[in-house]
Image (cartoon, rainbow, N blue to C red; front, side, top):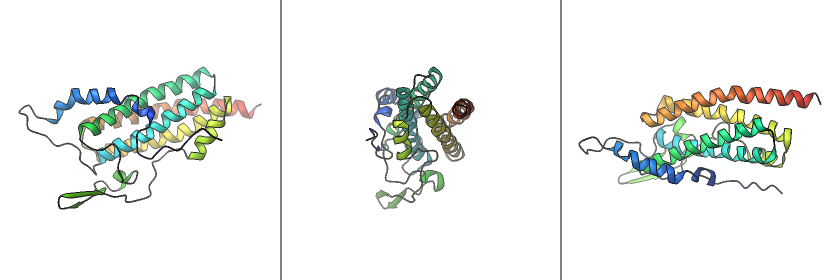
Length: 227
């Protein structure tokens, strides 16, 4: 029986929560950015915004990358794969903590009933205003791009050595492609400068990592085919 249990959608996992305290601390340090020098409040992302949707969905997306990277480090002794997986784990944990801190700073909940990727297809449609009452609703069955299925995770969890490496690299190529698509969509939709900077960093870093991932995958698939 697989030891992998499906995590609740759109709620940060333990891998993400590792940096929650640090993220909240950073949020406290920069909380002054929500005020002008005169103490007047400035606009900040609200429920239903692309910023909020991106912060939630990308946290969940990153959490799965951390989960898969942890699996492959337990399944192989290959130093190149283990080093890459560790780099992905640390980078994406840090970024997820940053996004967690934003939602805290914006006084928005970490989870939402809105469907994944709704912010990307219909920005602002995640809320319905009924006078003083704002109700969040799902609008579609969209799935975040590049996410591995539960079956994919179970198969990775069962694999060892080169089989685990190949499965991980294949899944991570698709995962990074999806992450780049999400971050690029954010660049087209969001106005918040901090969110735009992180989205651009994700596009740049994961695009570069895709070259490394594909090269490593080609090497292992060729070696496996030649056996």
